[in-house]
Figure 1 (cartoon, rainbow, N blue to C red):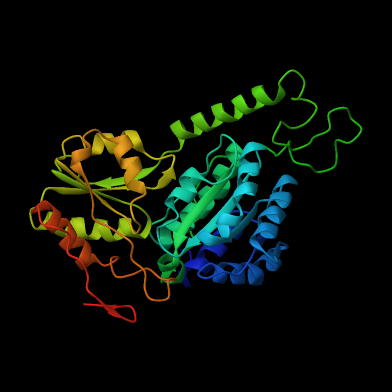
Figure 2 (figure 1 turned 90 degrees about the vertical axis):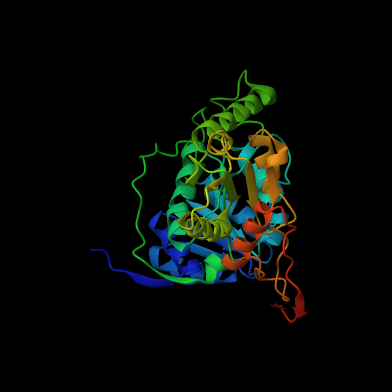
Length: 371
């Protein structure tokens, strides 16, 4: 039996990354992602890997991009503010087909648009995993590197400080994943002078596939690839939706809190279900439409002013069925999740909405305290 270890989320993610074959990480310290960089710095050299504390997020992402282009499993990371500086390089990775994992240890759930819409240039998407707890974070770390290599795309791993700083026991399981082909596109220096040299560029790569394709043809190939990914990689979790009159949609840590509340309400006789997108992109639209087919109420819980709710509205018919029950919720520092991420509060908001009452607001009393 594999030994169980008590780890916080950041350390578990790093251990999983090493088991997945990650050998390069460059980052810049920014709470709550700093612990990820610290654990990478301590652990990567033990497996002959390299960790660089860069001078900025711009340097970090481009160092990781370079390491990935020579064939290494490479990653970078920060929180949402740091990822904002990385957007051009993330777009470059998508458009020049470089597999790269970007860890976002977010301060809240306000980075949904950033992850699913991006801020770079060109026609591209970023596959985005949003784990609900430490155990799923370990699994998603393996999946992030696997999907990145499988499709040669950037993959965003979006957690939060609750996952990163919660300690749980884990055996660090390694999922069984398909064997991937060798990286015959990598810039390993072996093809110079052969007439089939490689390059990596957003207009295409290498003499072998350049003639007759051109930027137009190359970018069409990229667009077709993201269409294939959208069909193949959408993931979700749901429960009690078959006869549910109300379905609550939530992602990440919020999804775990919602699941707990829904199970309690189910036990009390309420016909209620939960739905959680595991990938924020591709968003599991068809699955959500099917799960909410018989529901008269669709409630959306997210800790922001309303971002995922746009994708819910695009996925299902009947906008009048869709109501937000989340909102902006920080503590006084602006670095931590606020009091809306509380099972008791979520329960009250669900019941208020079902009863046609206005959402109960939490009176602020200062210094991060709420009544």
